[in-house]
Length: 293
Image (tube, rainbow, N blue to C red; front, side, top):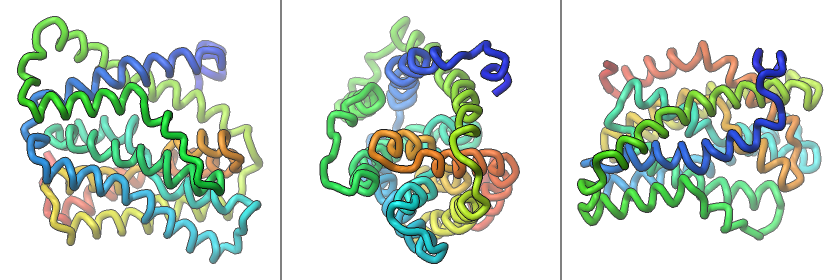
């Protein structure tokens, strides 16, 4: 935010920088983490991770819709954007660094989980926001998705051990810069969001209570009682603590939603997560009997 305010990071930098992050650096990170992962050699783990990632948005949308109705929100007044914004957590640029710090072995499982999330966003999310059944399938053909599918294919065929030397080291170095750069640009974008729409205590407060309060309990309950591998339980533990994702802001802009509502929920939940994130993770770890290092 300071870099944006002082003009060091300008608006014209956003698109080219994020293009490099999304299409070059982030795919390198994903491939580097997938290759050599023993957990992804199990079809059961891959299937569960993908399915849970896809279903998370559906559950979040249902909770958001019910809460929005109780708040007397209606179509045309931001109900769809509200549901979408509280329904999906920041599954990538914030979740992956936290998971890597706490459960490094679970990062490949998180990556497959995120593939399911991406599919749900560009299908269920777009249907909700656009209020029609036109799904932009081309949006799913991008650098990260190709990297994940390629990585899973190499692991499944046991060819991942051949990717070594300067190629693998280049991937590691490029990938290591993806998240610091992405988070810096996210801060700049959040500075811009603060000017989008007049804040509403009902929207921001309700969104925060759902995203950081009720929905984490539901996610942790899934991890507690569904039969899933330990790595996926670790992934859900981190997911439960995440603030709102940035994706609803983009979808709202593209498909006629209310970007200002998404911006409020993103800003408030991100700021509050600085305090709630460690509490949710510690509480969830005790409840799920997952040791923290």
